[in-house]
Image (cartoon, rainbow, N blue to C red; front, side, top):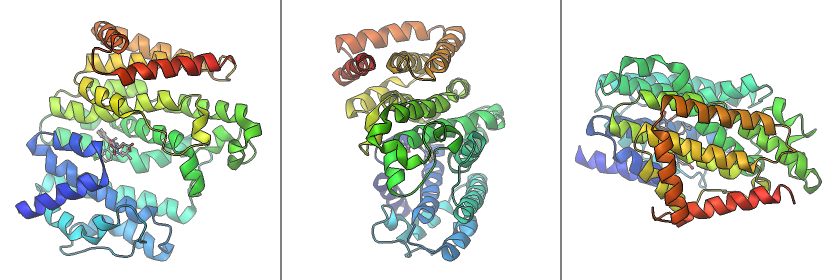
Amino acid sequence: MTITKEKIYHHLTMTSRSFAAVIQDLDEELKDPICLFYLILRGLDTIEDDMSIDLDIKIPYLKKFHEIIYQKGWNFTKNGPNEKDRQLLVEFDTVIDAFLCLKPAYQTIIADITKQMGDGMAHYATAGINVETNADYDEYCHYVAGLVGLGLSEMFSACGFESPMVAKRKDLSNSMGLFLQKTNIARDFLEDLRDKRFFWPKEIWGRYADRMEDLIKPENQAKALHCLDHMVFNAMSHIKDVLEYLSMIKNQSCFKFCAIPQVMAIATLTLVHNNYKIYTHENIKIRKGETVWLMKEAVDIDTVAAIFRYYARLLNNKTNPLDPHFIDIGVLCGEIEQVCVERYPNSTEQLARLNAGVLGGSTGSTLAAAAVVAGAVAFSSTFA
Ligand code: D9A
């Protein structure tokens, strides 16, 4: 048994860097179930992702994955040699052994979400990922990310750490996934374009270009930035739900587990906003020091609300006044500020502390201060 466990956490650290540490900080009751949920979803993803596997082979695996996780000894060697998490599937029998040791209640939640996600992926693999409208975009993100939020919420409520209301508010759980996924989709435009994966909805990019590929042409720079800011605006629509979800989470380890990815997302979205590098460079990431600062601060709802206010202000200041969504983004940022002041009044005091720390460099976050400078530079360049 302990041998299986070592293997599991080895796979976890191999597949994700910072998120592995966040999972390992969870209370004992949820650590293994959530680690295995993560690895199983990662396995499913690794089959879906691999364009070297023929569809007639791939689709049955996607549809049956929720049964495969109960089959002792199963593994998968059909991934191409360059697939990043190939080894996880080669040794998937170790994941299955550990999954079968979980309490049945957790097994059921994981299998149920895996079934729904596998069906969704099979559908998009067959029909092609054709994201026309904003509703299509929300639907796609629901299958690949919103369902994860739903499953985790069910686990939180099932173990009694959180109220049954957390599992009941599926709308809010869904938004937790959509905010993360949409931030990544905005950030990863170039990488996804290179891999011929088109996630941006035509309802948005169609206003700025005839073909999505045209966005990277230098002569279309202004339109491309307007389009990017529209994608940022679309992602921001989930922030109020995210804050409401986080305000329901009472268990300290669950709170940090949920809050850290969300504060990383708002920091990333702020970096992406009005940033032409999205179209010229892959791997746009927030600085390591900023990540460390966020992981340290995201401890309670008042501080998290302060972090959202902090980034909403930075983000708002980065909008080009000539951008078609200048006012829309301003209104959303104002609403975030308003909701926080109303529901989390102590966030004002936390915000003052964060600002003092960043400017004084006293939180050991000189890199966060650098982010302020970068924001100011980006702001001034909007007028250049
Ligand atoms: C999550 Cl079990 C994810 N996804 C994430 C990571 O956070 C969410 C995949 C599997 C699981 C959980 C997550 C965390 C906490 C609460 C959540 C939640 O809902 C209530 O999911 C919504 O991104 C992937 C999806 C977005 C598709 C769901 C965070 C993560 N961060 C990466 C950072 C990066 O740059 O990708 O994985 C990392 O640290 O490697």
